[in-house]
Length: 187
Ligand code: AMP
Image (tube, rainbow, N blue to C red; front, side):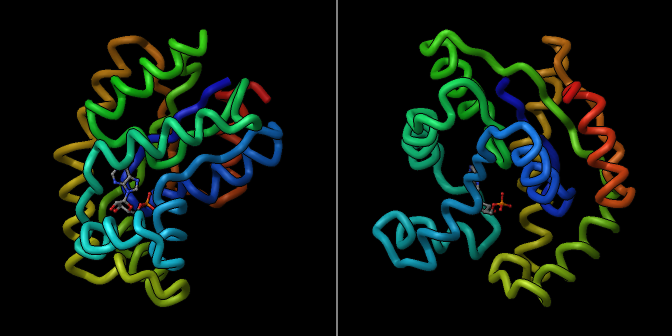
């Protein structure tokens, strides 16, 4: 099972990916978390991506592609994973297809997390206060929503053509949303 969580920043993908990961015993692979850890540790990767992240822009595709290759090679992701926050561009989506196909695998589910924009902004402001994320400033929040609309939202049509998109009404409580995810995934 390779499950993709697609949706704008603040739509609760991360929270739900953690819950599903625990239930299925499959890893949650979140590029945003991997990159934030690299920035916090000041690794060469972290230094390369910090500025993009702080501005709310996407990190270049080639950086992400290297990262995706590494994570797909992880033994725990051999027969399933939850992709949280990637692919985020058409180029990344094509690369994911190629890498999975090379392993005799494919994406099995695409879940689209749907939340109205005012609610997203409210959640991200809250997260900035609670978690102190440097990419949750008002400017970066606006930028990240714009980047989502322009670069990531086109993936919805791409996956819809294949008939694999399931819409999740993601404004409800964490439990209510988890219940929808469970119904879609069937576990
Ligand atoms: P997230 O935690 O998923 O919202 O990601 C935080 C930030 O990390 C994003 O605003 C991007 O700068 C960067 N990032 C995470 N995943 C990707 C990706 N798949 N492609 C490009 N940039 C990414």
